[in-house]
Image (cartoon, rainbow, N blue to C red; front, side, top):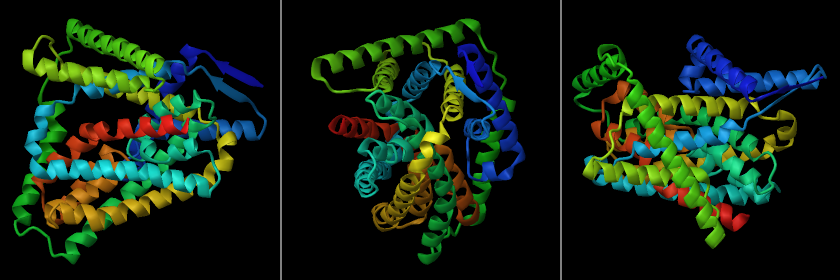
Amino acid sequence: MLIDLNIISTLILSISLFFIGKFLKNKINLFNKFCIPAPVVGGLLFCIFNLILRYFNICTITMNTNLMGYLICFFFTTVGLGISLSIVKKGGKELIIYWILCGILAFSQNILALFLSKLTNINPLLGLMCGTISMVGGHGSAAAFGSTIEGLGIDNAVSVGIAAATFGLIFAGLLGGPVAKYLIEKNNLSSKLYTSNLKLLKNNNTKSLSITSSNSYKLDVSSFLEQILIILVCISIGEFIAKVVFNTTNVLIPSITGCMIISVLLRNVNDKINFVNFDFNVIELLSEISLGLFLTMALMSIDLFKLSSLFGPIVLIVISQAIFIVLFSVFIVFKALGKNLDAAIMISGIIGHCLGATPNALANMHSVSGSYGYSEKAFIVVPLVAAFLLDIFTMPSIIFFINILS
């Protein structure tokens, strides 16, 4: 029996799975421990359920996921609107060093993925999906660039990227804290001001957790529609530029890249002349909605039947990526950042977001800081690079490799 869901039914299912994932994440501590997002939980749950239905020949469920392309462009546009280059100054030289090393690491991840794809005899573009795209970019980037690669005729690119990103999340949560702990104890870096710093950390955590409840925010319809209009205009211009570049130079630029470039330019020009009123509460809300729905749709539509033959190469490449990033972090990044407590805590962060996602990085750093002392520098540098600045390196790197391999 075939069940074919139209676009509305698919949207209903994805929202329902989002809530199911959120419920399970709150109830099962393991999901919180590894910082696995609610859409990943709900989407993968349905993916496995659909596999069981097909395996026992009960029914096959197909979905209309045409909204995914619009949702991911929407999300990356909101990310671009959050990038203000003036914030870079607050990180000092450590931010520049960390940023450059993350860029080198991201490029090296692609080289390693391509080498291992040849070793395991899979398509290099599928191997590339286990590199920077999924390791640094996470599920959102994996699904977005996977769609681009599937458009080149490579089947299962999205599924491979999502699987690699999921394994990466797990390794990021397992490795970040222990590696930082090893560096701190080996070099006797525990803060002498541990008690006062721990109080500062707790105060910061309390403030960050209570900000929503302490500050009442009234959603304004005009402001809400204004932010949507700004985002849609950026998407339209970004997609137009991507098409023009491809038609004139034959260089493939994903729509998300064009959208993000336009939104970053708009944000930073607006910082100077202030001609648009940004409401970042609304933009953040729209960002979470678009990413949540996109990830849920991407995960629930994975065809595990087609992916089963690729599990071996995916696991091999991701484990190799994990080993490489630990070695790179311990022997290069830690030394370059000064071999101090700040550097050790940043190591837990780089492992978190270069194997998993920004929430992994922050969770790792909070865990290490709770035991060894707070690092204000780390909590400025890592989120800035992970959430915003690293895309300046990773986007061109990904586009470069896609074009030379296509």
